[in-house]
Amino acid sequence: MEIKLFTQPYCTRCPQVKEALKLAGLQWTEYNIETADGLAELMMTGSELKETPILVVDDEVIDGFDAQLSWIKQQKE
Image (cartoon, rainbow, N blue to C red):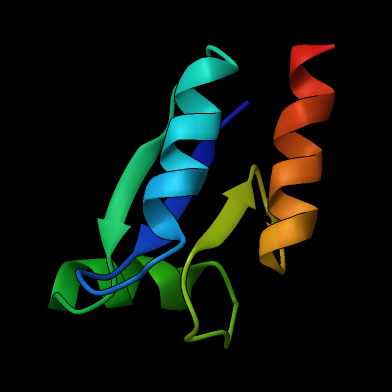
């Protein structure tokens, strides 16, 4: 399973998602969408979202903070 987390420096919820991923024992790659490389990686997912955090698992975009935390919680069970 490949997990990508798209963030930006002033994202208030990004640290919460990162902590939840860490507590669940999941490994992820983080991309800052304010950099050219991070934005290019986001565009390659096909997502047009710009509000972070953006969580992509394999090729599925998990949209919304609550949905992201719910998905992470399910992985712990």
